[in-house]
Image 1: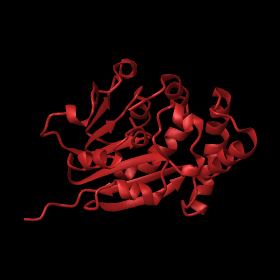
Image 2: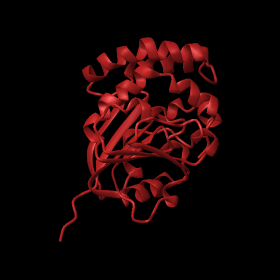
Image 3: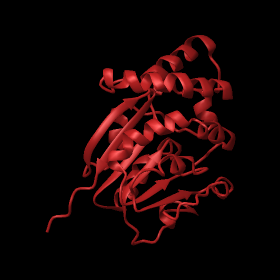
Image 4: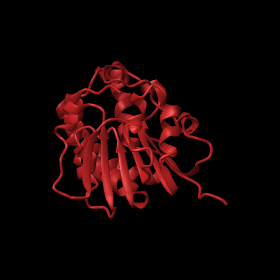
Amino acid sequence: MTYVGTELELFARARRWKAYLRDRLAPYVAGDVLEVGCGLGANAAAFAGLDFASWTGLEPDARLLAKASSPDPRFRFRTGTLGDLDPGARFDAILYIDVLEHIADDAGEAASAAARLRPGGRLIVLAPAHGWLYSPFDRAIGHHRRYTKESLSRAVPVGLARLELSYLDSVGLLASLANRLFLRQSSPTASQIGVWDSVIVPLSRVVDPLTGFRAGKSVLGVWAQRPQTS
């Protein structure tokens, strides 16, 4: 996985966006949680108010992980990838928040994650949406792809039960389209991210349900591991 630390720091300040994600994912986050590609730990901080037993943040870049910390004893952060975990480690929820698009073999990664789920455990993926929005900025920060609902579904093992598949940030999609057509900036500035978080995200929280979550610049998928049968 490839990250750009400066960009992670910029988006880590997007508190309204992370609060939106927290509220959308709250029904699925419980028990023992694993966040793959936790970066600076910003998502863990945003989700701290939810009722879960433990949260393991897994990050391959030790430089980024050095900035992740929490006084909450439920949180622990460690360097590595799924393959570095104890073979017997199992979780009730595994999160990839803007991470799966950084992984070349996304289907292989999703299969490995599914094998780490307890029966009924949830695989939660948030990723950038729509290949036609792929830009030099995506390439610069190590995105292999952007997803549609259909392409994200194809990356997930067929044995999992789909609980949710939707788009988020419909107003942000319009802003991204305007940038692509008119401004043509290769990457967002700190001030633009601030405007997006303070103005566009609150609007999307209102508009997204009105569209039935059918439009947005991010795609969210949640799948559950089926109960084992005797």
